[in-house]
Each structure stands twice: as structure tokens, then as C-alpha cells.
Amino acid sequence: MFRKTKTRLTLLNASVMFLILTLLGTSMYVYLRTAIIGQIDHAMQTRAAEYTVQRPQMGVYFSQGVAARIASIGTLSMTTSAFERAINMIVWDEELNPLTTLIPERFSPKLLEKLKGSIDATELFNVRHDGEVYRIVNIKITTDNAKRLNFISLQDSDGYIQLISDISTEIGMLNVVLGLIIIGIVFGGGLSVFAGLYLADRALVPIRSSWEKQQQFVADASHELRTPLAVLQTHTELLLRHPDHTIEQDSREISTILNEVRRMKKLVNGLLTLSQTDADKLELQMKPVSLGRLAEQVLEKVMPLASLKDINLSWHVNPNMMVNGDEERLQQLIMIVLDNAIKYTPSSGSVHLSCKVSSGYISLTVKDNGIGVAAADLPYIFDRFYRGDKGRSRSEGGAGLGLSIAKWIVLRHSGKIEASSIQHKGMKITITLPAL
Ligand SMILES: Nc1ncnc2c1ncn2[C@@H]1O[C@H](COP(=O)(O)OP(=O)(O)O)[C@@H](O)[C@H]1O
Ligand SMILES: [Mg+2]
Image (cartoon, rainbow, N blue to C red):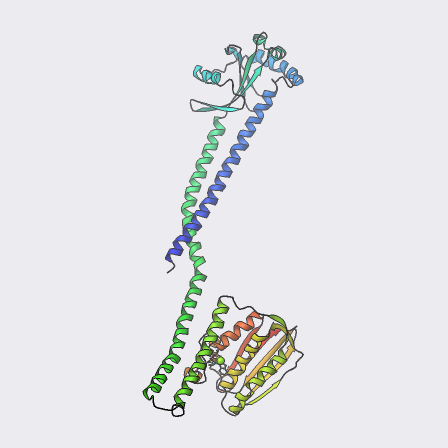
């Protein structure tokens, strides 16, 4: 039944997790790369600023230092402190000939060709050569600036300075990180399928159980409806057997049919209420109501029923006991409990209803000295379609829905309903609601 849903849920879960993993991995890599390359760029731009025209003081200041280093080392691998990056420098004249004394030994002619080809680039860029990666920045040197920088060979012409930093180690490290992230994503992707399966299973537990409950409800309801329908059919068939009979002659059949129709109406109403409660479609009209007064109204209604069975119905209520609730539903609740008490108490028994307030709660108790229920059955009396004595309950017109509706009403009023009973001695139902 749920296989398709489960597959879909699993796929959905797994792809969401995979997407999150990929996003996390990618942003981690991009952040790391930007941070590392950004640092390199910053170092190179700082160095480049030493040669730009826009900062004459700096230029002058550094010119002596740079010149001194060129003189003493002959080649330029400039590091001003032990922690600063090594940045190589190549100076090109106007005809794009490199100042050979400054070229580091490991720079092959092929690399120099590549460098020369990119002399017009204005932004920082990478050059790959022989498995190494270099980060480059070009600086155009004017005659003026060349003079100030003391580049003797450039003194009468324009030229270029190219700052070159070997970033192979950093790129290598970034590649290792990228590899690890990809492995993580692939591995995590595999895991996320299992996790997705597990999550789908977990998510389906409540759905499955409510589906099963619903199935059970429909099955029980149909079963309950079958009996009255069968009775209706047989009795109508009996009527049809004697078309010449008068209504008086068939009055027994007709009254059975009428009783059965009443029973069915009650059952269908109960089913409707429960299906509405399941779908959360029953709105309660909450307002302050006097529980005592409601009880009195219901008592009045059931009085004829009690006197018919010669049951002594007594009560002790106080009209000042107020609760916040739905008047109609609370009446229904009291009716269900009183109806049961009268139904399951033999003639000349007694039923007593009382109300009392204690510590913010109002408790309404209905106590009878009827047949009661066995201790083993007590936990089930609030279940749908549960009937202690099928035969008796049916003859009394119940389908086992009353107390389950009662329980729903009480719960919606933030209260609780409890039952205690001794078999053959009687039953006590206590309803507790928050007082106003
Ligand atoms: N006052 C009572 N005395 C004895 N048994 C009761 C009483 N109230 C409820 N019960 C038991 O609880 C069952 C469920 O009650 P209810 O939900 O109202 O269904 P119904 O009255 O239609 O059987 C009854 O069938 C009966 O066995
Ligand atoms: Mg009942």
C-alpha cells in the first residue's frame, strides 16, 4: 500500500540531504579558495603598489631598498620578512626583452614566452606551466617612474614589471581539499540514501497507523450497519408476504422496522460525529456555560426513561458551576453518560449525578448500581464499537460509540473522563473540566 510513497519519500529525503551536502561542500571549497587566493593577491598587490605611479612617496621610499637588493643579490626574490611570500620579479623593456639578470634560473624560455604573451593583462591571473601554477600581476612602468625606481636600463624608455608568485603548493592543497570534499559528497550521498530510507520509514509510522485505524473504523461501521439493514429487509419481506393485511395486523413488524430505523439513525449520527472529529471538522462554540444547569436540562430529558425502568434518579448540582465550553456538546456528553447509567442498571436500581468544585476543576460524577463491567474490560469501554455485552447492548440500541464520542468531547474541553466499576455492583463515571 505504502511502497510507492515510501520510495518517493526516500528519494526526496536522500536528494535533499545530498543537495545540502553538496552545497556545504561547495561553499566550503569556494570559501577556502577565495581566502587563500585572496591572501596571495593581497600580498602581490601590496608589492605592486611599491612600483605604481600613484604612490610616489612609497615609490621613492622603496626604490632605494629595491635597488639595493637588486645590486646585492643580482636576482630578485624579495621577502621582507620570513613569513612573507616569495615573489619573483621580471622587468621587461619597451621591446619586451627581459632584463636577464633578474630572471630566476628555473624560469625556462617557454615559461618566459607565456609570461611575455600575457603582458597586457591588467588583472591578476594564473599561468600554468610544467605542472606548476604561477600567480602574476603586470605593472606598466613609465620613464619617470623608472628613473625614480632607479632601473637604469629602463631610464630612457617605458617598460613592464611582472610580479610572479609560485602558488603550486596552495593550488595543490586546494585540490586535495576538493578531492576530499568530493569523496565526502559521494560517500555522504550513499549514506543519505540509507538515512532517507530510515526517515521515510519513521515518517510513515503515524500515517500507516492512522490509515489502519481508519480502515478498522470503516470495517466496523459497515459491520454495524449490516445488522439493522438485514432486520429491515426481513421484516419488509414479511410485510410483503401478506399484501392484504391491515396496518393494525402488521403493527408488530412495522414497529420493529421503525425501531431499527431509529437505531440506524442514531448509529449513522454517531459515525458522522466521529468521522468529523477525525477530520478535525467539528468546530466547538466555546462560551461560559453553567454545567449544573446543563445537567438539570439533561436530567429532565432522561427522567421518563428512568421512571419507565423504575430507576431512582437523583442529583445534587449547583447552577453556579461555570465552565468554558460548547453547550450542545456538553449536553451530549452528559446525555451519553446518563443514558448508559440508566441502560445498564436493572429496574428498581438507582442512578445519582453530582457536581463539585475543587482546586480550579469541576467534577461531574454519574454513579449507578447496575451491572458494571469486569475489571479486564474497563480499559476498553472508551474504544469505538466496544460493547461489553453485545446482545444486551444491541437490544438497548447501542453500537458502542457513545463513550468514544464522550471522550473526544471531554478532551476538546481540556478535561478528563475516568471510569471505575465493580462488576454487578455498578459503575462510576467521573468527568473533570477546568472551572471558570
Ligand atoms: N453505566 C454503565 N454500566 C455498565 N457498563 C457500562 C456503563 N457505561 C458503559 N458501559 C459499558 O461500556 C460499553 C461502551 O459504552 P458506549 O460507548 O456508550 O456504547 P453502548 O452504550 O452503545 O454500548 C457498553 O457497551 C457497556 O459495556
Ligand atoms: Mg452508550
